[in-house]
Length: 187
Ligand SMILES: Cc1cc2nc3c(=O)[nH]c(=O)nc-3n(C[C@H](O)[C@H](O)[C@H](O)COP(=O)(O)O)c2cc1C
Image (cartoon, rainbow, N blue to C red; front, side, top):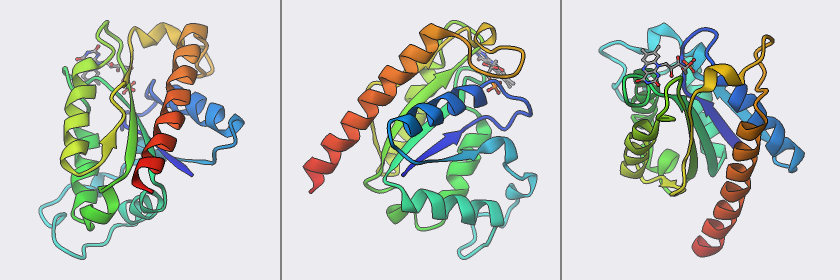
């Protein structure tokens, strides 16, 4: 099972179509996926007691349970002010107080960056990669930056750009091969 985190909490965000395409592609490859969509990140996560040990939260507890079950994660997230979104960092910080060693340690992640601009969130990919590495998660070295995304979505909110679909498919093939290799090394 693979967990795919959609990392924008913006209503009607443009990152979700990329996640849907990725989930469909992985399903076609016989891989079951769970999408954790941070568009639904509840606003009551951020408060001064959020780091207290044993603090419960329905969204985070569910997310932690899904992420704990899976050894493979894909994160897709937009570029906000030259980095990854603050909402995604909040999500990671909130999860990290729930036994971060078993949750993050030894997991494998692949990263997809999206942006309206030309950079494809390259800096955000590097920044987020550093955060995951810090928590003990192995990040596949080749992340996928996707730039100029506004024109890639059709009127129904689906990914229509054939070149982007091809890049994501190739990225996911590489990710599956990488995770198989990682599993062999750690066996
Ligand atoms: C707060 C904020 C900051 C942004 N900063 C950048 C940026 O630095 N570079 C860029 O290319 N696009 C930037 N964007 C545009 C996003 O890349 C754009 O909204 C795109 O649709 C992906 O974000 P979404 O998944 O939230 O829709 C920003 C958008 C927001 C809301």
